[in-house]
Length: 120
Image (cartoon, rainbow, N blue to C red):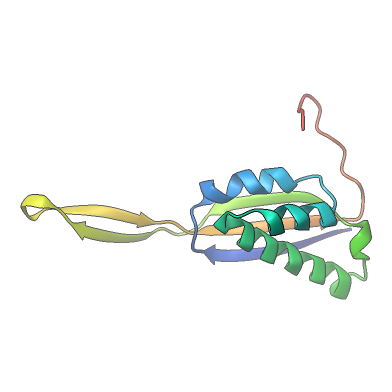
């Protein structure tokens, strides 16, 4: 059974979070929590928070045990971009893009198989 959790409009660029979500895919929930808790990057906090939410969803809504769960999928999509302008020389304005992310984590109680042709 698959259980998901989503964090929307997170104020961090998607490219800064994607490498961490790739690192936790296919791992057990304990290993994934360990990776996010000991990582110093800002994105690790948001991924860990979403992962804990997915674990709580699995335990409370689907009656699954946390010890049996695996991270089936961890995806970061781009959210809306907040556009601002900064004054520049000679009366010009330079654009600033404040990017947001949507983090989606899917857990499953079935151990995921490794993809063919992909080394982890």
